[in-house]
Amino acid sequence: MVKCDLLSVDVITMADSMKWGPDVIELVRKYALQNAVEYDGKGEVGSVLGRVLSERSDLRNSAKKLVSLVKTEVDIANSMTEMNGSDYIRQELLKLAPEALDRERQQKNKGLKELPGNTENVILRFAPNPNGPLSLGHSRGVVINSEYAKMYNGKVVLRFDDTDTRVKPPHPEAYGWIEEDYKWLSGKQADTVIRASERMPIYLDYADRLISDGHLYVCGCSSEEFRHYREAIEDCPCRCKRNEENFSDWELMKDGSFPEGSAVVRVKTDMGLPNPALRDWPAIRIQHQPHPIVGGEYKVWPLLDFQSAIEDHEQGITHIIRGKDLMDSTRKQTFLYEKLGWDYPETLYWGRVKIHEFGGFSTSSMREEIERGNFEGWGDPRLPTIMSFRRRGFDYKAIRDFWIDLGLTQKDISISLKTMESFNSKVIDPKVERRSFVEDPKILEINGLEEGKTVLPPRHPEGKIEGNRNFTINKRIVIQSSDAKATNFRLKEFADVEIVGEILNIQSIDRSDDRPIIHWLPEEITTPARLILPKEGLLKSLVGVMENFELEVGETYQLERVGFARLDSFDEGLATLIWLHE
Image (cartoon, rainbow, N blue to C red; front, top):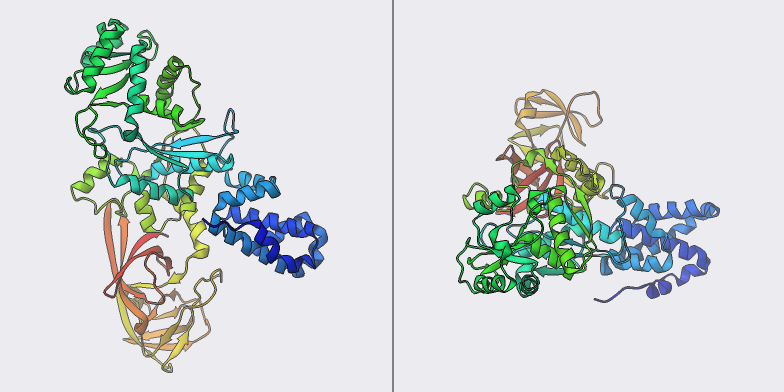
């Protein structure tokens, strides 16, 4: 990648150096870079100018002259961010003015407490099972880990925990889906990407060593038999086998001589521990089912607590962030670390967050329902997948803001999806253009209007998006059939009218009274449209017409009196939109 750096900035701002001293140029540059970092390369002149004048009140009388310099530096900072990414700009700020990054940490991480322990070289990990794409629940792990990495200039390891070949086998396409969703949510690719299934020799080597040293043993008890020993706080007979015998059985497990379910490898802890879950917990099991990626080479596969513990050490993970329901995993893995003489990473926990509208979904259940044909795919608008949220038009920043605002509380929370929708509205409203969708359209002829009359509704009602749409009216317009029940109303941005049969009489171009305002369209600029609404587990379609002004597939629009919707497709003249939220 070609780097745009600050050397070129000095050349570009040479003319301004004749008007302003180096102290002013450096001050403006600092705040331009700071603003670009905070807003992902969309820094604004007004914001930067305000910060500069706040620090240097003596420049207020020269504010108008200063705008040119500010605009130049803002444009350069935004371009640098677009070319090289926010992390590169952070590095430049560290050289120029390290204190400028404090604001980002304070503003963007209000809900995140400081990481405990040593934070000089922070390495975190996000470890999904690739049995499907990322869900809304997974997005919490992406956001929190990547945000902490930003705070401490650290790294995130994206680790695919894909060592279960039978109960939750990986979906071959899910690896790519997850990497794509991770990049979308975090704004960058993960610093390291690994697949646990491709690192089996490492786990097997550790198992060899731990069995030889007497820390692991091969248990041939059935699950019912071992449950009896565990509850009775008695040693399993297999626990007393010599290391050589355990290693011999282990070799038979690895070469496939033992059938599935006939043995497991256990970590030797203490059968008298108060917590039954920690008593000689299982580390490796037999699975002859071929792996979708690495095939049938391995007959034994590590359980998650063993594989994850080894891999966290191998990758140098310094901090683990997980659900409080996995506290026993921390305790189990700590036993293993002690046997190997390692220090366990700092661990933080969060409580469960239940979104009312998606209470019963899991990746496995979604996969089953999709295979049964009950959903059209992982991007079905009714599913809580990131694939679906992207398709509907959610902005990644809204999802980040939601999780960061919630923070790392261990309290279990139950909230409505409307909370996340409110975050999304704040993010997208200023940058989403308006369009009109007319359900169940009724055609009316306008009386008293010259042909070719032009009306120019704004792209954005508050002018946050410059420009207008173009409505050219000849003779006929369309309105919603339900609106035609009234006799007097105002056509938005146009005129007060009276309806008589199938005719509209114009009464006043200016607003003359408090009659209701309705949306409408000239018949000539309409295209057939349908709006899909995911409601209460069903997909409902509203049929009508939409204005065809500069429509672009993939764009989100705010439909007059309807809400936000994303244009999903535009095939053979039919515009299909997916409703997002109000």
